[in-house]
Length: 182
Length: 446
Image 1: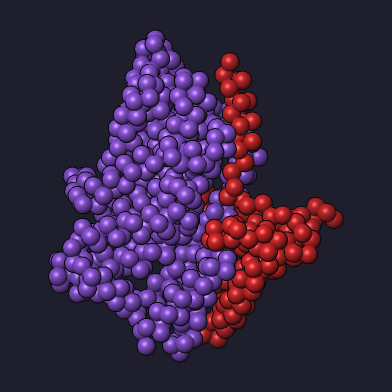
Image 2: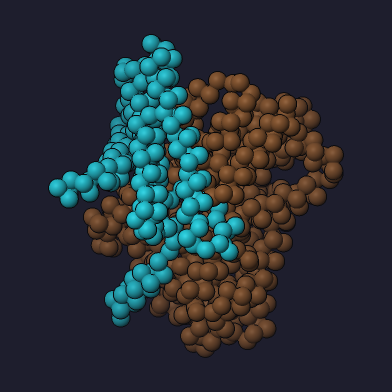
């Protein structure tokens, strides 16, 4: 069961890594086929762009889960760390407002406003199958924002900044490689 | 009407940033509020969410991020540092000059200033101290050259600039006044970045030579170690070939930048798995994961920045800014100086790619309307933002270097000032002499 929840908790990461691996391989196949046989599949480029769009929006949700979306924080330098999380939580209310409104807009667009004939040029399916990623990913992102704030405020966990560079780790790796060299 | 929109858009944006909202949220919410205020249909957001991201050239971004992450995991980047180190030789300041080159090589692959400072500094700062360099000097030169690599192609900031600029055609009034501007393309930007990057590196090397002479940092007594250089070149051969494959592929017209990045990924996979044997499944998955959140967060900004930019252009706000600027001065050199100082300032505390995405819709139309070439503008912009990381008081590279050498930030900042100064001088030269940027692309017929 814990394994199951781990997968659910990192679902965007699994989806994105799979999509990334597939479209990178598809494009490589295209390059190979073009160079060797002077031939190209008409659908590869379009399909990989759609997979890329899915990858981007699920990736944005994953970035929200990691607390990776860039904020400007230097104005908080002189505030106690305890206060910062409440200010950021307040700012995140705007994020939630934006996401909820955007989910509403995208559902309205997909089901009511989209042209019936707006289909993929090379594969024939209706483009709402691609656009559907928008309400799904932005809903997920909203859940992630709530999850991160719950972790920070209620559970009091310290979120690690994914951009921070762990000098000790790099130091250990460098030392290991120097050892090998000798 | 316009002044109210400017107030809602920029005021809302700055206020949200100030209370610590993510940059993408600050952009999105302030644009949405302006849309509602103007009574425009916000359904555009949905279409732009799809069209701003769904483009083939943009796929170069995750592909190059993945290629860079894999090159680090597979040990290609580290071998490049070793090659640079072996060239230190008998020169005055040779070891620190080698650090500058190591940062150039590494930064070109990694695209992140602080990461470059960390990886290069970990090897080179102790090596410099061992040769009798001052601790603060060794840290300062590493921190100062850490941001260099982002101008060297294949440069991720230049890709982002190129994509953002593609959506910003020159305003008709500017075309009437200055003639047709050249079109922006990623290969053109890549080739234009070379000479400016080497000019900045050259300025650092010059300052390094002067200072090393003053401090008496001599080279090793033994002279060149031909054997060691040969050894490192042999070990680093496959790593040195990677840029040849990428850039050669693009400039021979064989690959588009996106395809070149895809080929680089598979090249690195093969070299890393079968020749250097340092790549494991775990490292591969970590590289994929890093690419996921890095791309997700940048391209979410791409979406909100595109709507933001669209709103700006529709309401002729860049034209208002340009008029305001021209009413103060129409001297192109003073305008450049204002632009450079503004970019250096912003680059100090905002993430590079986010800054580019936000400022291109604001500043590029202004640049057009005073007759600045878009390629030239892009290169100067990226050069300025690369320096933001290494200048006191907020430079991130300084913190990393201080963590490695255990010297206070203040001491490193003081030692880094001459480098920041000479870098700024180099940027002014690049801005004032457009030919430095534009000659090479023209020579190659772009």
